[in-house]
Length: 99
Image 1 (cartoon, rainbow, N blue to C red):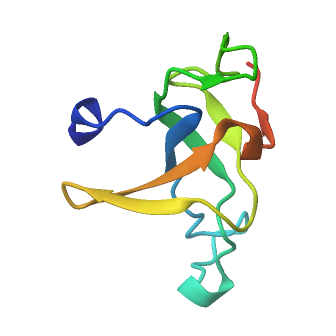
Image 2 (cartoon, rainbow, N blue to C red; image 1 turned 45 degrees about the horizontal axis):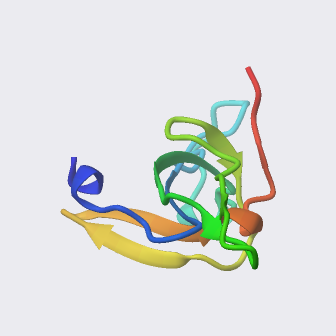
């Protein structure tokens, strides 16, 4: 609920990464070092968009609740009420998952 009090500015997107796989497909528990970095996340909040050179508002390409693919590196870590979120620019998001 802390993210409801936080509104990203301009073309920023606040995401929450999905939990890492702790068990393999065969049922073996994976240690933390063997777990890969999770590149999937759920969009929690979005800014209003960026303003182009003509002064028009460019809308965001993602909406709250969508699942997105993130780059391996980048983003700004934000801790809100003991939960870890990340801020990315709209252009940094690699894609979104379609149901």
